[in-house]
Length: 154
Image (cartoon, rainbow, N blue to C red; front, side):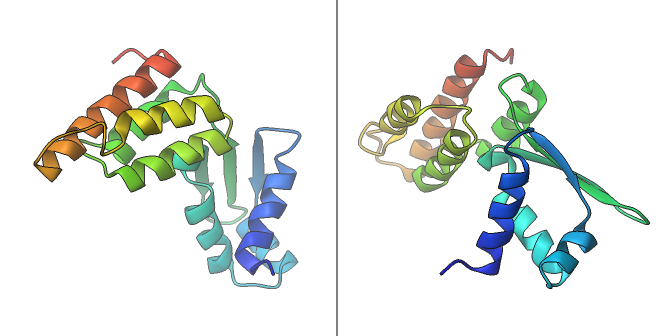
């Protein structure tokens, strides 16, 4: 059985089927689903994140709105944000896998690319006795692959 969060996420994704960008009002959406605006915020902050392939811009105040954009390959700035904020100087395999699955879900990478990258950053590929060093190397490899895939200048 789908949760309210799942239902709201599906509704928003269905709205985005025809266009990669939508503008919604939190309060109107909350009224539509008979829930608190905080429930809408929860969906937006957990299901429409940059690592899942979405960029959110919010305008507060009277008539405020939330703009949700599906990231396209040409969005260098968003990919840079992904590199700097989400990957950082080190990353665990689990976190990297979540990030990559988000890129696949948003059609920024395909299934084959996902699998190849996961093999490249797997713990078995990074034979290092120091865990922190392994996470730093994984971060560097992942950043370089993403830079190569999206042809971004460093």
